[in-house]
Image (cartoon, rainbow, N blue to C red; front, side, top):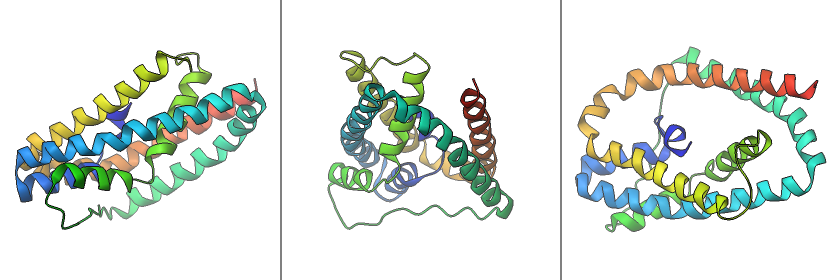
Length: 194
């Protein structure tokens, strides 16, 4: 889940790519190691929220109804961005020499991490795929960290090759996200009427 979630050009992946180009592959790997430290904490926080929802099932039913609106809205936004074909990915440019610390700092500024893990852990729990008890919580968090590190490592090691292909992937990725969000909205709508 983390591997696929970070695959698209975004804050962490583009900053990893930028670090690999500016400072070299080894420094980009150190950046990736630093970036996964906050992910460990963020995924734990998200699972605690999901565990709270499990104890209060009425909130999940209300959330499912609200999720339809959210997913449709996000789908429309991604489709609008795709139609504009105006892909601009920002990276942070701190003047920090320690790549590990730099990775931790950039990852802390990632505003979508906790909602990402919260949403997917809740969806997995609702489907009966994820059990919100130990050792499953630790396995989920460890998997999120390993998945995130794996994709960041790929970005770090293959920076020049990826840099030449990012534009094509990014251009169509917004459309893919729009379709996925629309499917999730329809699935939530369908589940709401059952």
